[in-house]
Image 1 (cartoon, rainbow, N blue to C red):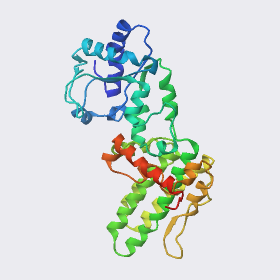
Image 2 (image 1 turned 90 degrees about the vertical axis):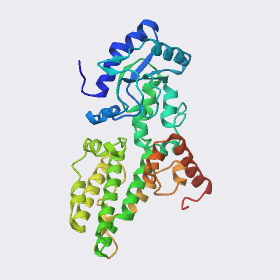
Image 3 (image 1 turned 45 degrees about the horizontal axis):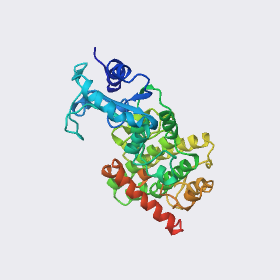
Image 4 (image 1 turned 45 degrees about the vertical axis):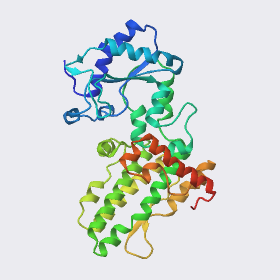
Length: 354
């Protein structure tokens, strides 16, 4: 029997191999089986090309904290009892992060797994700075993949915790998104009129990327890493945004118009959420022949925030993905943790203008 996706392989691997092993050797154990962690198949975006590395039978098995003592024996059990292949796929194989050729059933407690993927202890929830330090891809790897079996008490709570930003954190991130757009929007026309057409196109792409990120936040979905972001973006519950037209346009006016239309679509989504939004978010840029995002929009949202930490952070900084795009930082939990010190430094200055 063949399966079309990695998630289908993982589901069958649990149903026909791992689940029966656990039932036979550890009857009564309450556990969850899922496909979490790295890999395009976690999000259901894998294809034939995905199978050229790190490919085989993969599964995540999680238990609650009171059953943490069972983890070592579960690892030993699977080391001893798992077959060499399943569906003609390897059960033990080398990966880009582990060349030992061991099996790829990751066994951990729910909270231990979350700490490993997020780089944070979530047993008492997440602080404001914790939330701002997490990229969408990291959250999706922790709680966005398919769950095939779950009798734990803690995994549903973790999934609920990571479902979306808390309300005021969301407002802070949305506010930062609009502020970023207002800072660069009028430069699409200005650079082109000064003979810098390449720069105008680069700014258009930058703005399109920011609009796409803001769309995820306003739809309360996590943006995956850029390899799959356009595909996930196409699945958002929004009217079509003319970002492709903005990128393909030959004139700066057409680029600006497509970006403006996209911004107004997001403004409509923001109003639907009940967030404060002016009637029009695209306005003239001083007396010049360019348009921009209304600069007051970011402040309008920011003024509704009451959380003392968020109020003290600089307007416009937002989530880590809004000011860092380096893969070796965003995908590395200890490096992300180091950047949290910057947020704390801004807080200790006592001056949100810094």
